[in-house]
Amino acid sequence: MFKKTLLFSLVTVLLAVSFSCSNYKKTLKTGTNEMKYETGMDLYEKGDFNKALQFFDILRAVYRGTEKGEMLTYYSANCYFQIKDFNIAAYYYKQYTQMYPRGEKAEEAGFLAAYCHYLESPRYSLDQSSTFIALRELQSYIDQYPNSSKLNEATRLMDNLRAKLETKSYNIGKLYYKMEEYQAAITSFESLIDDYPDTDYKEEILYYITMAYFTYAEKSIYSKKMERYEKAVEAHNNLAYFYPESKYLKETEDINQKARTHLTN
Image (cartoon, rainbow, N blue to C red; front, top):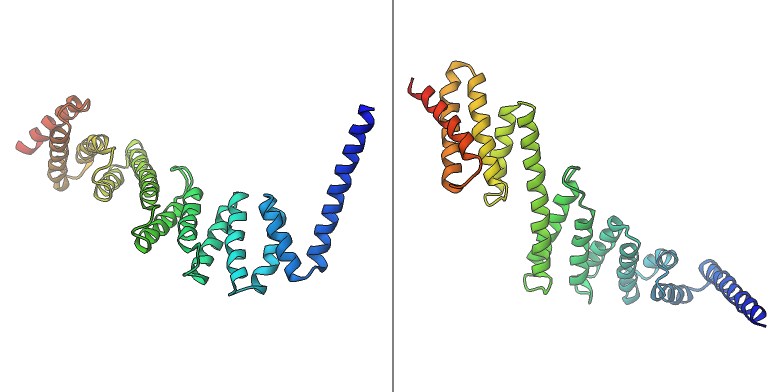
């Protein structure tokens, strides 16, 4: 008896699914725009975002500039967000803000467009084009909605992105140093401090700048040596001033004394 009941239930479910799929395809192919709209919204509410998008993609142009068109654009963005296609989600969130700037969801869509770019930002070792786009979009959102409840979150996301760029710049400088490309290392480290004066890498950067300038001076032609020894002394003094307990001071003090010896001879 139990097996018969189970089999009957299974058959019922399969028939229902089959009917539903058939009905969905029929509506997509021959249904009226209103039927397609209702079916798409129903699929969206059920979390079937891929199928919902098939209806939304057909209907956005049909209802463009109307209340339904506004919702279709917003829900299309949400669908792509839910299936983790963040680039296209960002496109439709942005489109919503441009087409419906006074829309009910304009502020939310503006934040989500920027957030999608944030999610697309890769780890620091890869190309950071998406990171710069995300920073630009988040700043644009903050400028447009300075009183937004999302202001703190947007600022936090920007801080995370900047930290990633700092890490990338720092590692580029270290790579140049290890490759004995001292001029490139110095330029990279000094640019990092200019761009991020409060960077968490400042102690290490001052250490590497001290060492790089001294070694660079040692390898330089005579007319360039004195200037680079002076820079090594200056970098050491900055390290000692800002980080009097630094673990690097013992090593840089030795470099400092050697550089000063060259400068006084």
